[in-house]
Amino acid sequence: MKRIFVDEERCLGCRSCEIACAIKHSHSNKLEKAIREQPLPISRIRVRKDENNAIPLQCRHCPEPSCVYACIAGGIRKDEKTGLVVFEEKKCVRCYSCVMVCPFAVIKLGKEEQPAVKCDLCQEEEIPPCVRACPTGALFFGEAEEFQELMEKRRKRGEKDALLNTG
Amino acid sequence: MRKMHYLILGNCAAGLNGIEGIRSLDKKGEITLISAESYPAYARCLITNFLIGTHSEEDLYLREKDFYQKNGVKVLPGKKAVRIFPKEKKVETEEGKKIPYDALLIATGASPKALMVKGEEKKGVFGFRTLEDAKQILKRAEKAEKALVFGGGLIGLKAGYALKKKGLAVEVIVKSPRVLSRVVEENSSRLIAKWLQEKGIKIRTGLAAREILGDKEMSGVLLDNGEEVKAQIAIVGKGVSPNLSFTEGSGINTHWGIVADNYLRTNFQEIFVAGDVAETKDLVTGERTINALWLAAQEQGKTAGINMAGGEKAYPGSIGANAAEFFGLPFISMGCLQARNGEIIRERKEEKKFIYRRLVFKEGRLIGAVLVGKVEAAGIYMALIRKKERVENLMDELLEGWIDYGKFEKILEGENGFRETVTPDGRLIKLP
Image (cartoon, rainbow over all chains, first blue to last red; front, side, top):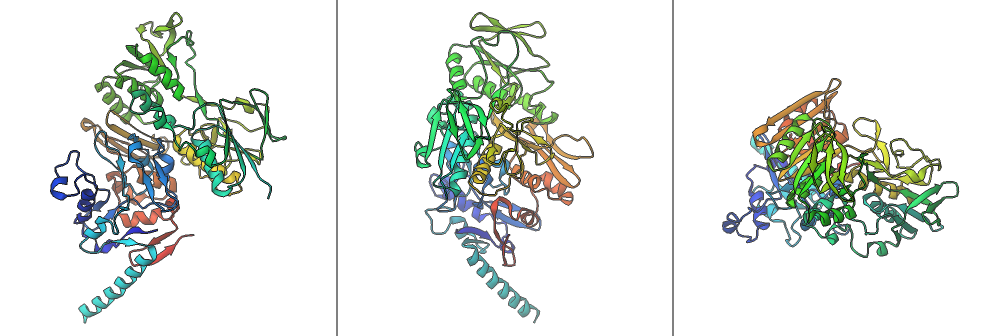
């Protein structure tokens, strides 16, 4: 299945992906309006950052997701056809069981009555807005093999650049 | 191959996942399901929400209406198994009917323990386990003013929480010195109790019921300190015991529950067990125990179902873990939380903000965690506990809630069924 992959070395931690995701999941789909919405729209992707590293994280749509077993409301399923892990947000009772078991810690709960949310891979978009928003190409949307090819290319080019610099 | 006949006892998390486990390998075999309750499988934990009124009965149903029909399951609702004959491969029901099977799944769950006091049979005393319980409580709550909850575990607190939300005065009576004594350690327990009290739920420790007072209907409770408390509802939350009386004389091994091996088989080749009635290995302590939890029941049911249909899926063991939210304060606990023998405890407290985090390490591995208030990182801890990974160099990072993802991803390789990963230098690694 097509997934979001990350070239960690290219992530600068600018959080453009977070903003794009929050706008996409807002009511208005417009930045200037989204920032005034109550409650604020929640980004499903989150950039983790320390002094040396940054990496954007979001739902990996696990082949055998433990959140499906954990949900006490029967609100999470693995779609056999698309491979997506689907959250039925209206079923959420905020019990935090999915948060308890997600090994990537990418499920978020907003305030009070809001349901748990996570990356849905923006089905109606050709390329998810977070990937489009990334200014450095750190995010990639596609099959694992395609990402492998891209990384291979980048690695070769990187070696060439390094040679030119030292030469 | 001859058509298999599968028989499932129980129609909750374990039984339901048993059906799906079987059907993932065998589309043709016949499945019969015996269910003590007459509802389609419903989200048992959500009877709290049903009681509060945010969820209707239909909202609790776990699958689409045509689920049983689509999966070719013959359901016998409102029936109970009373005896098993493993040699004849037959199960006898209450009305004396014998149902044959090629593979049997016991997923009969558990029932609330009784209070064991005089007057317990009076109207107004309830367990909090089934949709029927919730319906009866709801009816009575309409004209009740006060409820007493006996037991400070999750079930008792959830029932108390729901009744408080319905506008009743609620008093939780706990025999032990603190609430949630089997779920979290002292610090978290104190924080959560303080939070609940601030929200109007009264908690009294070191007390128990001596007698339920009233005529046919309860009017109050006599406590063991001699005090009489007026109340129209009493909820009994003293834990559950597995439903296994029908295995008596069958030769099926029982101990705390029905003893399961690593494939969720009993001591009979074609009899499997899953859910609150199953005794499995605890992943953290290695001891045999019943972790009567939704997560465990679903995982076990699915695994047992697969193995009944000829698969060979090992069950790694269960882990004691709970998550809940009361009045907006979430908490999650998992594994071992006490220092008994050389464990290292790392903790962080912000009591005024109702935030607490505690990690327990043993021999370089994480074996337990509890989080109150800020719980987002919990799943990372769960994964590390399950994988038994050595993390002695990461203890401080872990306490912060996040670790270097590069290190972490290595640790998680293969977790949740991932069979491939792309490394930062562009290599696609296929995992075995």
